[in-house]
Amino acid sequence: MLCPRVVFITGANRGLGLEFVRQFLKLGNPPDHLFATCRDPERAEELKILKKEDDRIQIIKLDVTSQTDIDAAARQVEDRVGDRGLNLLINNAGMTRKRQYVGNLNRDHLLEQFDTNVIGPLLVTQSLMPLLLRAASLYNEPDSCNKAAIVNISSILGSIAENKSGGMYGYRPSKAAMNMVTKSLHEELKNKGILVAALHPGWVRTGIGGPEATLSPEESIKDCLNVLSKLSTEKSGCLLSNNGDKIEW
Ligand code: NDP
Image (tube, rainbow, N blue to C red; front, side, top):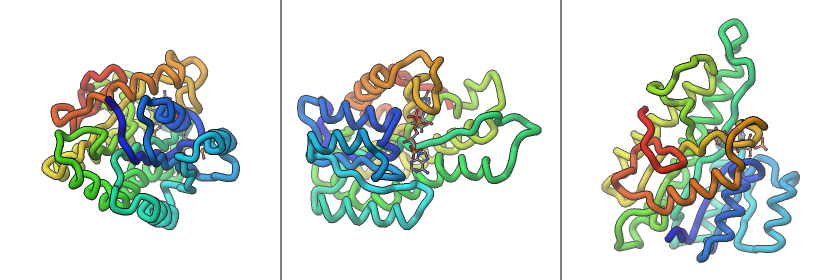
């Protein structure tokens, strides 16, 4: 059963991040602390409504491209959970740009996607690592998302093997790099009790997925939580789809 006690989610104000928050709160045994982070807490209306109903949610300001925000967010989690550590980090925040074809590319847009989709999540992970290691050391049980795990919301569009249509010169390489970060973290952490996975949530009707996508956020996150509930050492270090299958890099 999926029941991590302390969960941290980036980009939690809308789309898949917000749906993660909603569905974590509906678990049979919801987290004691659910850190829902977003760039602009003042404008996170839906998160604020959820918080009014459930004070297990902590809304924290976090732009993943700001080291100041990352450091401050990690301090707030540390202050709140202390020795319990962090069980589950979901690096969900991400972005893409439209019209990413040769002839229309520019440096700032390419860098922005790399910063948000790879460098930000990696530095968020670094700053929360002491808390993840602490949680991992507290549980004498097989590795799982209840104990300690890092889940990077990646994309099948970052798979080189699955690339049959090209283009998307900022998004695809940034997610491919996120996949490599996932594998490297897994190799570094596999004997320390922390699982690491990259998860493709399916094609979902959100800001990034657009209105034509096949899945609703509810359907996607239901699938994702099912995958997380079964995550184990066998699938750590892999890119997984929302049905739990491994996707070739
Ligand atoms: P949305 O565009 O609906 O949501 C993106 C979220 O990321 C928003 O909360 C946004 O915050 C946040 N975000 C963007 N930049 C930053 C930043 N610098 N710091 C912090 N938060 C930021 O898209 P999704 O919900 O679909 O995207 C969630 C994840 O799922 C992404 O990583 C995406 O790549 C991945 N994904 C989505 C698919 C889909 O079909 N929807 C398919 C495969 C992967 P703000 O409101 O402030 O802009």
